[in-house]
View 1 (cartoon, rainbow, N blue to C red):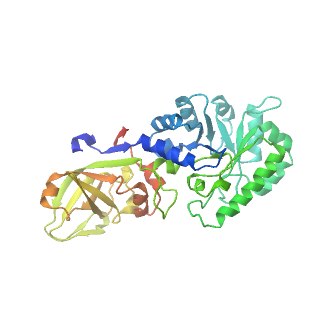
View 2 (tube, rainbow, N blue to C red):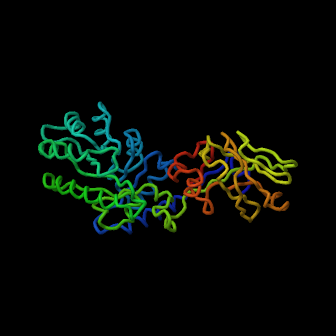
Length: 375
């Protein structure tokens, strides 16, 4: 791929076929009777919901999760009417009717939210469908055990609120041996059993991407993978069973031979010895190359048909990064036009680890200055 194909600022290629294959892999591992949803919040983890969601629909997905009302409205316009769309962070006061009008299901987290949902979307006997989130140990959004116990004393509210789904979220699913997992499972089973004594048809959702890999007991009626769809490893420490989804290539802006020992980058935190060769490439922290990977990041230099792993030098700047290309021969440097910042050889998980974070943050931070190509 020549520098001219990079549209000057870089090219982010999203493999939609890989997303479809990842969805199929996850769905195949679910217990009988468990449906596989897809989490497409944050613009499908930064990769473009308008492109990603229809592919997932064509792969058989009919249940989708977003984070906000606006995301839900956007997704509703993209997908056929037979999809169910859940809004994970609930609904803000005054937006209940707007949510119901868009045929979205909010995930409510308190008794007061249930009451307001009934007031604003209900008939005399029944509100629009909603979901209820309970806290089993994540200590984030959700109804705690004490409030839930009080709610069970008001069965008429539960019936009128039209709760279709109860859900919770695993905190340590990516650590299969963590004792928090079975503790949360036991708590969730208690919540589900208690609610079903009042509302027998209610369904349950517990597993995220890594939760699917914990086994059938965690699957319930609806699993909701997110990150694994986009190539992030649901089994850290093991080989990644997911197909890579993103490839990011950027142009080389300058090659430099260093004739005397010198410092590199802001704060003079990097250094180059005399005789070194450096490459300055497009892509900085304004483009998702997190500053925290400064001095620890890597990339793949592409010289003709050869790929050579190289190390980052100094701090990431807003628009550029510097890499040490001293290992390249003169002939390789003459062919060097492109760096692969993300791909099969340096994945979003690899970059996340180098930056002291996770692949999720890498994906959702990728900037808008890159050209994008979907295949």
